[in-house]
Length: 164
Image (cartoon, rainbow, N blue to C red; front, side, top):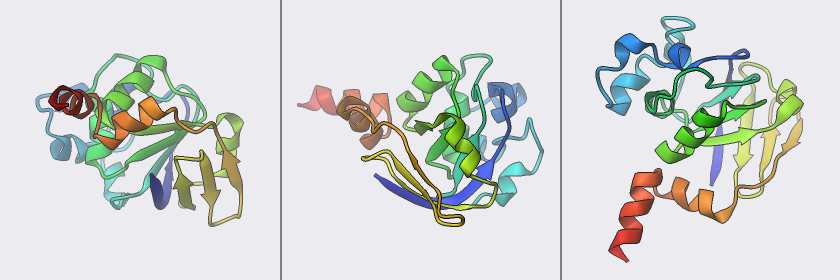
């Protein structure tokens, strides 16, 4: 899985209510949720996103309540990957279950600025910042997680397994 897009950097301790405020939880439609992604931070934040862009976050991204809507909103906004210093554990699990790739890079996240062009090779765990030349390495995903992502999340993965 390879990705290329512009970085959209947010701060630390961004909770699920900032990712998708509760007033928008009346649907599970990814497109509708995506239209309001990050509106808890800034109402028109998502208007700067182009499909394929990459969300970059500080520490503890996705903290707060457990809501599957948060990773769905990020995917619905057109961002297939979040690179972060660290993630709240329940958000981490929900993201992969919904088909959203997370890459945890610790302090290396500081090598990425808002607007930087990024290139990601998820299979090797390599992130290249095409703007400043920085390279970031993180552990590649285990095959089991890659299989879940390749099928769009846990539901797709289980459906395929049941057909076998």
